[in-house]
Image (tube, rainbow, N blue to C red):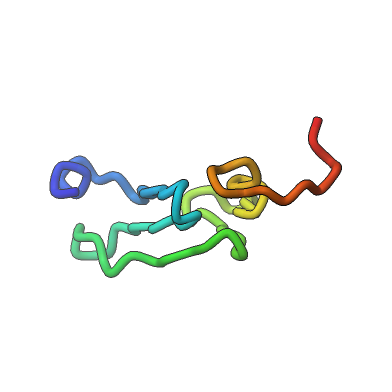
Length: 75
């Protein structure tokens, strides 16, 4: 994380597929990461660096371990 801070990486994510969660770290004004924002598979993320992008995490985690639900819309 300190390497990312020094390099000025504006945002990075840590994804936990088994827990179906995402931690989002955003570089603050003082060039340090604040407390991460936590998201689950029930959330939608709008990355700060891409204005129009929205990611529905239920779609991302749809086929992760432990997901036995069949929705019928697999391709």
